[in-house]
Image 1 (cartoon, rainbow, N blue to C red):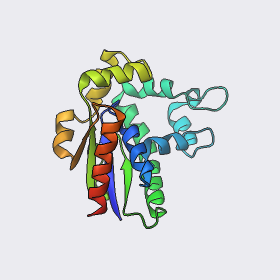
Image 2: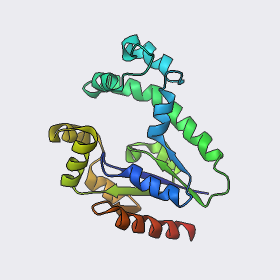
Image 3: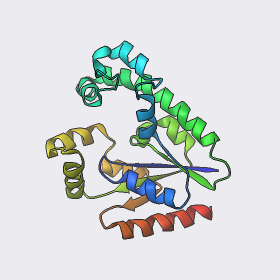
Image 4: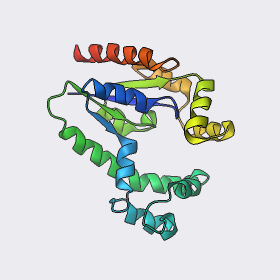
Length: 197
């Protein structure tokens, strides 16, 4: 079975593209969803995170205060590295488990936001898709979706591999500057291409 990585800048539409592949029957493994599962009140990452960052990262119901934790690690490289050292091995192990359960699909897609900074995932994938969209549209989407201001978006983008570099590293590019119909056509075309490999 072929494993395909799917990545893109924040707000580019990775989830929308993954959902379109899923509608075609392609197994999707999303590392963001896995991270959320691991950090639910009974998730296996909660206790190690509390041991590292303190019980104040949880609210009164035992739920992770994601915004609070994001604030802690966003400006402190060492703390961000500690967060990654706790979460990333757990996420990767779950990805491997889910891939082993896929069955006889022609290919599966693993959604990884920072794919081109993740050697483990690059060893796992045979091809990689970059979801691209222009900067103004990205700002517009993130303002609507997450109420982020341009300076906040720029700060996040600085943490990611540059758009130019990702365009160079990707095997396939999906441009998400239009409507859902044109996006759907691009996904279907790539799907056919992958089925023939």
